[in-house]
Amino acid sequence: MIKIEQKPFQEIVDCIQVYDHILNVGCGGCASVCMGGGQKEVNILNAELEMYFDEKGQNKEIGSYTVERACNMTFLEELDEVVKDYDCILSMACSAGVQFIAERFPSKPVFPAINTVAIGVDRDIGLYEEKCRACGDCVIGYTGGICPVTRCAKGLFNGPCGGTNEGMCEVHKDIPCAWYDIHERLKAQNRLEDIYKIREPMEWQNQVQRAVVHPDYAHRYMEEE
Amino acid sequence: MDNNSEMQVDTQKIRDLINQDKSMIKLMLKVCAHCSMCAESCFLYVHSPDDPKYIPSYKMLNSVGYLYKKKGNVTWEDLERIKEIVWDNCVLCTRCYCPLGVDIPRMISLARKICRSQGVYKEYNT
Image 1: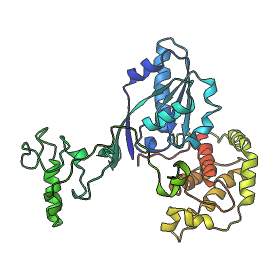
Image 2 (image 1 turned 120 degrees about the vertical axis):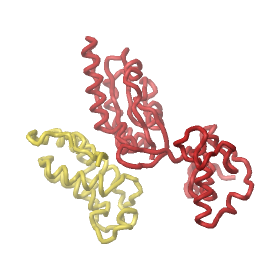
Image 3 (image 1 turned 45 degrees about the horizontal axis):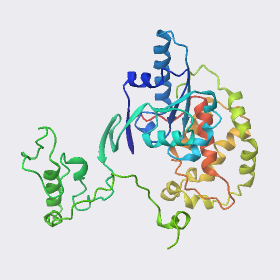
Image 4 (image 1 turned 180 degrees about the vertical axis):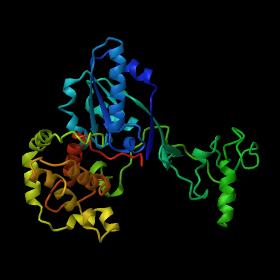
């Protein structure tokens, strides 16, 4: 799922301090699961903001609302009547959700209260690890389920660099070398030939905005040739 | 859940939320023919076919349906039970299908909204 983390408090304050009526919108999806932007986090941030502005002698109204999923416009419909009473929207959804909110309410300034960090996994409660960079051309089938784009500091595709040192990366002694791990895993599976082949350079697909059209629904969105 | 056990459930707020969509809720509950075709469209049910609590119509009838039938006069225990249905038994993937046109995801979403209005929602810290 998407993993997020809250922006520094002062950065959030700097965005919203010129507005008197602020709506903080949380998300019940990924943001809630990683405890970064769900209903509880919205309540906590609002309490902190109210306390901050009270101390500054600034009278502000800070409302709260949590949608089930900010990345689906259907779930944003219920905000239509709510946002009318506010000057700006602060959102704790991931950047995709924040952009969708901004798209739905183009006349309202919309600010993210979080940084979208990664597509990642739950190592444990409160510990989330990046696993994927959404490059668009997944090669982990050939690399033993280990992503060289995410795990290798240099994003190498055909083996380790000269800096690999006893299984660790030259960037930091505590960072495992991705290609060492890839080699060891494939060796255990008797599949080393997968990385002995020289593969074409990856055509980086995440440099421009992409859209995914499910083949079964292509007829809805694409003109027939 | 961030409510105080001594606090009362705000039943009026629940009624207000139900009344906002009363005609839709009434229609959806009436239209449901209990045909269970929605069951096949829920991947959670497909993987737990012996547990009827994963059937989308069950989830709808025992969340919004219950709130509607009780006219919002529910207890914290009721809300906790509904929370389990609409969060633990449903991921709101919106893939459930109803041949009669019942908008099940919308109903589940409404149940969650009502729970949230009372400070009842799933937390991910356990």
